[in-house]
Image 1 (cartoon, helix red, strand yellow):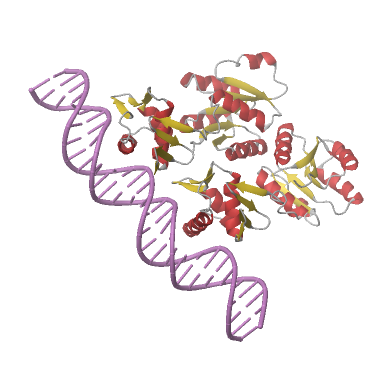
Image 2 (image 1 turned 90 degrees about the horizontal axis):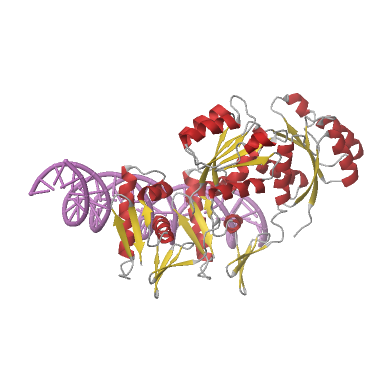
Length: 226
Length: 226
DNA sequence: TCAATCGGTTAACACTAGTTAACACTAGTT
DNA sequence: AACTAGTGTTAACTAGTGTTAACCGATTGA
């Protein structure tokens, strides 16, 4: 497993802060949670995080002011601002450069994660170096390779992504539209047919171990069993 | 596939609501999100969720008032209250009974999930990887397969679900409307006829072992005997 | 006993998914 | 620029699944 990334989260709403913290932790971040701007600055000094996620509206010191101060010490650390809907665009634009990005509330964790990884430029962090067992097979996501005993088969990027998502939900149903949106961007007719083709290809490649199957659940999606 | 559980979430803070919704969705819930007490009541009527998660402090109608109204229509539906730290214990205690539970903000998703499952009384979250014996047959729910001696028959998803529910209540009567609501979503005429067809198909497949029978109890449902 | 209702069975149908091959496009190579 | 290999999309055909319809028998209550 790769090293945890230390992230400073400054968010004063306790409920939201707690859940964002937890979600990031399950994704293998080490989260330092500050409840206001001043505390955030102290924790930044003390903990030296790699990336900051700052709520703009906070008691004691707002996110922008905090960012200016931190930038004097560290001009490269990536910062993501969490802004309220009411925030005017031009104020945000003033901070839209360098290692900065922003996210309007309400946001989804997926959006936050994507931005975090983009700024860290470590897109494939979570999938790093993982050897995923699928029955007798071993999937190496990084190398797009599928091992079976002494054989190794190369997977294309699409095949690999698809199998990876299936393997994440082993023995559970993976939603059709979820895959389509995730991998193809939308779930229109043609993409759906394209996916069918890939399912077909994967089944062929997974035939070596008869205990591994991709089962269709009509109208819902697929289930990888092993 | 294990059908999605419909859950009504009433939470007025948009950021928190969005993230709780998303987290529940990744755990395979169907989440109906209401932004205030009135909307929550309307959605409760319309969507008929299985469980409610209500913020206590909400605009237009607070969680407790809402719960009282809903309890008049449905005295058994599980309700989880999300309470602020300031909420006094005795007020909460007034609602601590029956299918109720509460959770202090800030809470973690894990805590919420545990309470949801507790109230739903679904211990068997991950469905049996186990092989279910039905007379001389063995049902493998995961793989949708029905084994008989050396033969293996593939079941469709519907067949498998239906047989699974029957096998859970072996030698007991399984309610018609229960199956219909569980598998088809509602118990209208057409779905009922559709189910008849599936019962018919299953009987055909179960013929190999004459000791296994699906017996109809007119007006009530079916009994799988073996 | 007879109509009414419920459930059983079969087949037709509509729709979804599976498979294969042809095609278009990209990137790398000569 | 031409050639090649690899990848993903589109198309055409086939197979599988669940719903609807039609017809029938069984059970029930008036």
